[in-house]
Amino acid sequence: RSVNAKVVIVGCGISGISAAHRLVEAGFQHVRILEATERSGGRIKTGRLGDKIVEIGANWIHGPCEENPVFCLARQYGLLDPEALTPENQAMDIGGHPPWVPNFFSSSGRKLNAEDVYPAQQMFVELLNESSEYQGQKGEPWACMGDFIRSEVQQRAAEQWNDIDANSRSLRLCVISNMLKVECCVNGAHSMDEVSLGAFGLYKTLPGNDCTFPSGYEGLIKNLMSELPSGLVTYNRPVRCVHWNNTERRESPVMVECDDGERIVADHVICTVPLGYLKKHHSTLFSPPLPLHKLCSVQRLGFGTNNKIFVEFDAPWWDADCEVIYLVWEDEDAMLDEVPDVQRSWIKKLFGFTVLKPTERYGHVLCGWIAGHESEYMETLSEQEVTQAVTHLIRRFTGNPIVTPKRVVRSQWFHDPWTCGSYTHTGKGCSEQDLDNMMEPLPSKGSQSQPLQVLFAGEATHPCYFSTVHGALLTGRREADRLISHYSSIRPSELSKS
Ligand code: 6YU
Image (cartoon, rainbow, N blue to C red):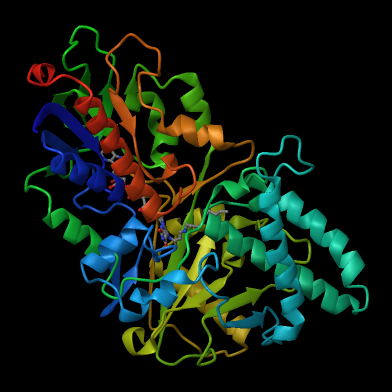
């Protein structure tokens, strides 16, 4: 049946697009997406490095298996390599991917032996696995992941690493600092001191060996968009304020005010703006403002920065089978993941590079990863300054004084005014309740006003797949389904009124 209710979706990322899809399929006649920028996709953004395709935003399908709707759509649209489609690939339950083949370089220009590094890596991975045991525990001895890891490493190192010399022991602690920087990137956090220990286990992985889109993640967006009615999205139309609970207009109680002054009346608004944008603009984006419990959750959840720096070379300086390069600073045995002087030494926060594979497709391209305030500072520098810093770094760690990048491209997610960072993590003091609060529609339950005026989707509203594309997609469908079941539970005679 057809539904006449007017639905405005704010944001044309994967969550907004999937909400629109579902509503249109279910017969909603008046669905409109308002998007601030000139493009669809949001944090799914495929760019170029010369003639190569690079992902500025999302990279992998995390957990490509039958339960993952991104995998199912990508398969349906024919966007994946045959290897990703094999049952073996889908069945691998390894929490992401098998360990990558690493190369380790140190700040004194040495290539490190794997045996010198593995004990520290192993201990770190053990601790990450153990951290989920603290989930939901009140009064756990450590408030954050950083404290937990440092104190456990100290204790275990005293017990297990007492047969090695001081230098080897110090190097292992420097490796722990490097691993902490890796985790900052994985979590999209400035420091692991800002990530809750008690809520770390909330994030869930799906089975499947993580895979990429050989022709770019944006292929998914293009296919989905081609199935929506044309004209459904209005681009370059930032929303300034969502006025809800408008008691004078009982029939259509929401009014969306755009930056250009346009005012659009709606029955329901699905808000999909990133958590970073919400943190910065909540006080002007909603009138009346968000209820206190919702606002507290917006503030408690974390939204940090993770950026990529793509670097192309004429020839590789890493091993042929190498998949990841770790850069270990030999003066970092304090197990810290923050750089004391950001302006002078921001580059120390870059943990290393992943190698883009296969080489036949990409040539010799590395992707550097850098999180936190150091990454935000990097965004303010010119491409030339970034290239210079990366060149010095690589020359120092390889001991090769002439190695020179051919091309460099980096992302700038913190200064993107419609994102204000990269993705969500569970900040200190967070619990499951915060993610529940994020997805709760307005007005809150029990209110006498018309229900479901403002609904919330987007990666930050998924209880266990936050920070991912599949999480975001599922939240769009969830909010569409909320409206669909609302309208299927009311009498058809009432439908024609709106
Ligand atoms: C994934 C991956 N991946 C790397 C990097 C980034 C992200 N993610 P959108 O922002 O897309 O859309 C909102 C729209 O709203 C947007 O278009 C705005 O312009 C618009 N808007 C804003 N304000 C507006 C206004 N006022 N008016 C109108 N419009 C407005 N996910 O699955 N695989 O490899 C990565 C990665 C650098 C930045 C990622 C990855 C995250 C996804 O990109 C992201 O979740 C979704 O695209 C968001 O879609 P959306 O619709 O919600 O918002 C324990 C534990 C660990 C926890 N973490 C585990 C690690 C997993 C995360 N890994 C990520 C890794 C990478 C590399």
